[in-house]
Length: 139
Image (cartoon, rainbow, N blue to C red):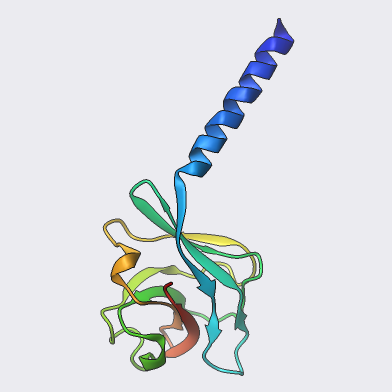
């Protein structure tokens, strides 16, 4: 009887995990474009929708040179118009989160009420020193 309960519990957990995974939808994804050849900044990213919330997920291959104030922003400006000097002014940017991991997989919740479809670009910017690490078009 105990084996049957364990098997049934395992099946239930598998079904629940599958249902949860099916509720996640990748709405945008891409590769980071580096702004400066002197800065380490590369890897993949995606924006995932789960229910009514969105999350920026950095890939296993993500790598960025450390800086004191790196932040992820969504912007309405195209990437080729954004610089370190105007990154937090041009295109009505919205702060997603402060970068807490400089290598590998990481997730950052997009603030409630923000729809990534209203933006053109995702960027990572060192706000303290007005230095754009790079970004990517939302596609």
